[in-house]
Length: 325
Image (cartoon, one colour):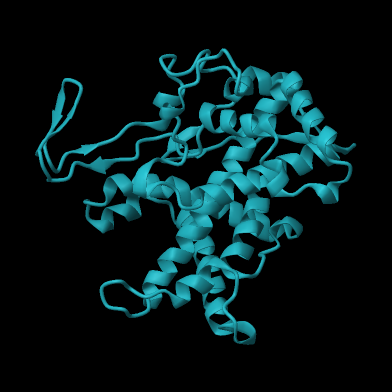
């Protein structure tokens, strides 16, 4: 359901029209299965981009290709519908694609062509929804596995607001424990746990030197986020979910310079602020209105929460019981 929630939010923000997957079970299954296959296939294709494309047909099953194609067609269809709507009422819309449609190429001053816009539509939908739903799944799993932490978060949210209508992102930013819970979830299992490569550029003084290592221009280098986040050199008890490490007066070691769930620099995730907004609102509204518990707590705690690194994390399914407070 978190995947469907993220998909509905992204479709509305990107194209100005919600897919409504939360209320359409058949559509929800098709989209979420297609999303999962998209992520799995991207990993393979990222390591195969220099191979003859004909080999790909032997790597990907036809069923997986069809499932991924459904998501891509959904994104492109939403884009085409957005183009046809144009500027409604003569004013530019507040959605992301409205700005892309008016954007100009810096080299030529011309609008982006349809092929480029298709790529943006697919990227926005897949990258934006999958990573945020993964982060929320990680956080909720660890909250349920640590009841005291869940109680602290619930007490902070419920003690701050007198009604659900009062819960707004602007005021949520002043809740330190909510922020700490989100940061800890992003640390212990970042949505993009793997290598994000960079190329050493050719500029003065020439080679890049890191410690005792020398990297000449053109060398591809990178660091896996999770290798930093789970390193005891930077974080005390790195494999333990402890949001308290992020609080101002915490005695726990927490080296924020080693924390990079959205990457760093000019290529950092453009949607990170939107992701924080979605995570903050979702978690606050959930704990304020609902009581969550594992459907099978013994199995969940025995199995733990492990993801598969496919550049972005492939998360397990977490079955949760929900009751109104």
